[in-house]
Image (tube, rainbow, N blue to C red; front, side, top):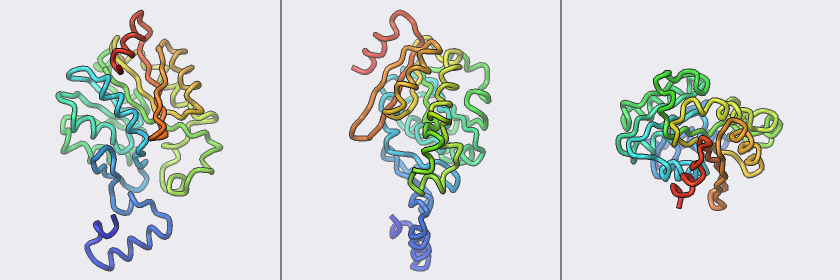
Length: 247
């Protein structure tokens, strides 16, 4: 990747030195591969993980025609970029509390989805009230690392990515609770909330969903080492809708 990215021998030497010193490869070349696309990244922005392809997979399966999609804690907006490149007539919004991530997300979306809107703010706070009850898919790869576990993460993450994109509080699911708490206001009656979590924390994420009126299910992938909790408003046929959508 460095050989491909460098335009001169001096530039290649500088890139190699950056990598030797621990700078993540994606930040050196300026992009990360995700679901077959190059997603632009920048210093101070969370780098997309391959495990998030599981969330993307179920978003595809659950998306109705002409979906209204919101990606919370969007970072580089990798999920939004891939959805916008493949779903027809998608109405797309994204939010992030970090202004650096917001600028990165806007750059990534401007060409592939020029009508997409990226808001600067905390979770639902910046969304227009006109979206209430209209969202088909609420997607979030929110921070879910327990505070005390951040010190155990690889240096590429803990030294180069913003703590706000990693720290999920004491048990790692503080942000999941906040997302679940307000999801009912924004989802359509048949809409879905999809949140990436870990196997160890899935039960806590499910409990947060159910506490706030959502029917919740856990899906996982050994290949991707990924876990996602999927929630839907607790209507009589909500569970059947889940099963039909995925099988």
